Image 1 (spheres, rainbow over the protein chains, first blue to last red):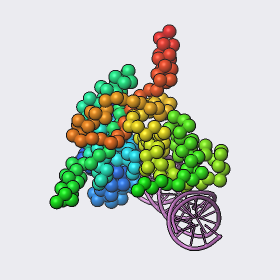
Image 2: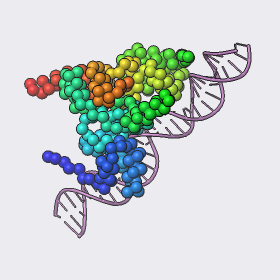
Image 3: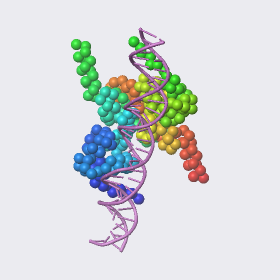
Image 4: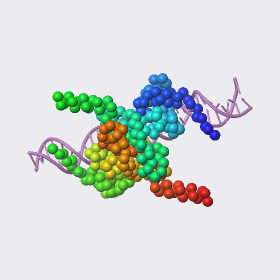
Length: 136
Length: 136
DNA sequence: AATAAAAACAGTAACAATTCCTAATTTCGG
DNA sequence: CCGAAATTAGGAATTGTTACTGTTTTTATT
């Protein structure tokens, strides 16, 4: 027996926002965003729906060493690149990770979190550029 | 010019506690523990020193999808197994991860976080045992 | 459609984890 | 030893999140 949860306007609006970007927004950012189209929505509703959506697997919650949790529209197992310079969070697909984990564990791994600290594309270019300037 | 930070009694006591176990304690657990030998230490001091120690690389901060941050005496890059049943956190050394990340990134990766959700050794045995009993 | 039960809501208070603030103490450099 | 700098205790404040209460919306039943 499949239970289809009723999708409220609030729920739909929140999900739309998350699915419309690959920004990995925080709950607060999502709250600010959803208020643009639904000014009377409450913080509690945002958190409740983010939790429900995460629990049912429609979105994915990401927790990082610093700052609040973020939400990801991509629910497939994948990692994240956290930029050491600008703090941005972007998807990072590291192919063999899951199978390596399985080998190490000796059993299947259904979910993992992989957060890599490094420079994002943009900041890496910037850093290289600066380094060149210093050399001149 | 190397700057050696003064090690206060508080700092030393906190570090000792972390280094004495592989329990991945939370700040609050560390606070409770350090108060046994230093009853007047304040929460703020514990947090300030945990941050300082993490920043200088003497210990490592672990953040998980749920619950407060934890602290690890092992600063070498490695992952963690978070038990889905009992919630315990144990070290997990997945050898090739770093090199795979390097390949994917195209540049060296100096730090990563890998948290795997699965059953810990103990709970896995327990689960198997229960399953056997059900079969009887 | 009328209506009762269930679910979700807004608004806000409460909570837990962490940080910040101030005055007092401790350590350092000379 | 003395003044500057760093660290502390204690507690207030902040942040991110959850819980509560009374109201609205949806669903199920007729």
